[in-house]
Image (cartoon, rainbow, N blue to C red):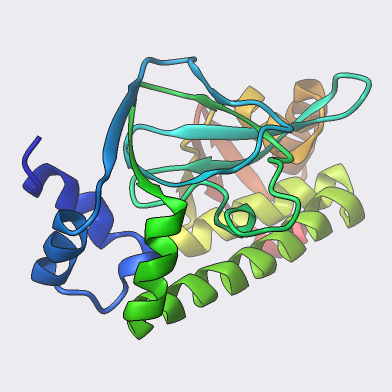
Length: 223
């Protein structure tokens, strides 16, 4: 496969911040990479498996879920083109994945060997700094995720989501990109609990609902 189709998603990858297209092309040419393809709903990894490679999503989506002993599942994250798979575990002493990962659609991964990647970290200070920054950003993300999952009520979680999406989309007319079930899974709540809170918000005049399109009328009532 020529390098050009690989280039676009790697330009989005945090590892290559401040890298030019030529820099990334040279990085790829200098490595013994592998391309892996998966169909929708394939298992990419199971919780407890060791993280042995540097995997970056080129296309598609990987869904990461954590399960309790009772079988309850919480969606932790979705990895899209440019995202690295479990970078915090690549060089960890205990490098076992805490989540199971499956594909949400046909997905392609580029894989680099860990030893080779370590050598490149020593050779390129930009790559090293970007990797450290990526790990720091993950810590920030997990802190926020723990706060949402553990400390917020269901009502607070739903209000937080709507306000966050409005800021991201820069409009009060929010478009939900995931189904109600997927949103509920990401919060570790039941779908009917999510639906009840949305109905409460609408009845209170905070929002208007039209399928996946939600208009925020009074953001103060979502807090």
